[in-house]
Figure 1: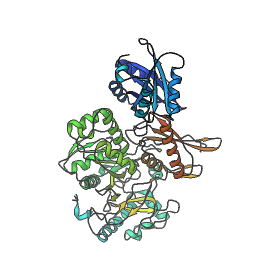
Figure 2 (figure 1 turned 180 degrees about the horizontal axis):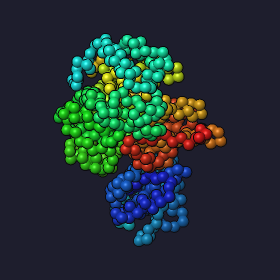
Figure 3 (figure 1 turned 60 degrees about the vertical axis):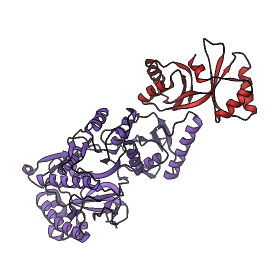
Figure 4 (figure 1 turned 30 degrees about the vertical axis):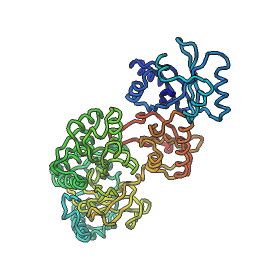
Length: 143
Length: 436
C-alpha cells in the first residue's frame, strides 16, 4: 500500500546534488523519482529508488542525515483531469497533503503521484474505495 | 566503593590539609622570593616580605600573577630553579597569543603523576586497565600528563596521541582500551565516527573516559556517554599550574576535587580582586605549593567557577570546583548582553541538536548579530519542512529567552563544522572592535 521514500538533508551549496547523485550512481542505485523542498540555507531531497536499503547505506556512509518515510503513490492515467479527481476526493474528506510530486515512466502508460499525508491508512482506504489505484512496492520495483 | 590512590591525603581532615597548605605556602613564598626576580620585585613593590606570610590565610596579601607575566618573562624568567634541575619543558598552545613555556623538576613530575593517578583511581581505574591516551603528545601537557598517571598506577598505557580517527577506533577495538583520555570534543567525534563506521559501543571495551582541556557541558557529557557507552569524567588543569590533574572528578560526577596538598584554590571577583566566600561564582585562582621549577602564586586562570566544601559521597575532603562555566576571555558581549558559549551549548543539547556548533558574531550597521551554526542531527531531521521549521523556531525561542537577544540559526550538514583534535573553535568574532 505504501512505498519507501528517502529524505536527505542537504545544504544549499555548490556541487552538493552532484556529489550525492554520483555516490548513488556508483553503487548502482536507480532513482525513480525525486523532489527537492528548499529554504534559503538548506533543502530536503526526497527520493524514490529501486533499492532503499542500499541507498540508505551509501548516503549514511557519505555522512548524510537520511530518513525513510512511508508515502502513498497513486497510479494515474496520463490524461487531463485524473489528478484533479484524486485531489478532490482528498479535499472533500479533509485530508491535507503535506507535499506531493509526480513522475511518469517510459515503459508504462501512466503516471505516478506521490502523496505525503498524516494518516496513510485512512487516505489509502478512502482512495481505494473511490477506485483509485495505489502503487505497491512491487509496482515501483518493476518500473 | 571508592578507591583512593593516596587515602591518607585524599581523605585527610580539612584542618590537617589547611595546616599542610600553610607550611607549604610559607616555604614556596620564600623559594620564589629568593629565586624569581619578578616575584621579588612585585612583593617588594607591595611592601610584603616572605615573613609576612605565616599561614594559608595570609595568601590574599600576595599580588596576582597574570598570563602576561609569563609572556613577559618568556622563556625561562619564571623558573625558580637552575635549568640544570629542569628535566622537562612543556608549552601552552599559544592559541590566544604568544606561547608560554613551563618547566618541571623530577619531583614536579612525580607530583604530576600522583595527581593524575588519583583521578584514575577515583573513577575505578587501575593497573588492570588499558588506558588509551588520545591527547596530543608533545609540548601540550595533555598527552604526557595522562601518560604519567597511567604509568604511575601501573596500567597498560596506550600512547596513541591525537589524530587519524579511524585508526583510533581500530586500536580501541583491537587493543581493548578500557579508558579513553582526550578532549571532550574529540571524544564526541570518535563517537560519531564509530557510528559512521557502522559500529556500536558494544564493539569496543571502553568503560570510562577522562576528558578535559576545554569547557564542556552536562549535556555534552550525556551525549558522549551515550555515543561511547561509558561514564565520562571531567579533569581540570592548565599548563601554567601543572597540566591535567589540578582537579579531578570522582564517581559522583558533581564537580572536581582540587588536589589541595599541591595547590591552593581561591575564587575572586575578577573586577576587584577580592576573595569571594565559598559558593559564590567568580574567577578561579591557583597557587602552587609544592612545585619546585615553576611555582606560580595566585595565578589568574580566567576560568569562571564556584567552590564547595559540601561533603562528597566519595569520602574525599578536597574542596570541589564546578565545571568552569566559561572563561572571562570566552565571554562574548553581544548587544551589551554577556553570552557564554557554554550556555548556548546547553540549549542546543536540550533541544536534541548536536554539540557541534559554532557561533558567528558580526556587526552589521552598528548592530551586533549572532549566528548559531549547528549540525543537523537524526533527532531533528524530518521529511517535512514544517517539522524542521518548527524545531528551528523552538530553538530560536529558547535562545531568545536565555540570552534576551535574537540569533539566526543555520542548520548545516553533519561533520561540516570543523573538528579539532585539540581544542574546539566555538566562536568566530568578525567584529572589528579594536583598531589594531
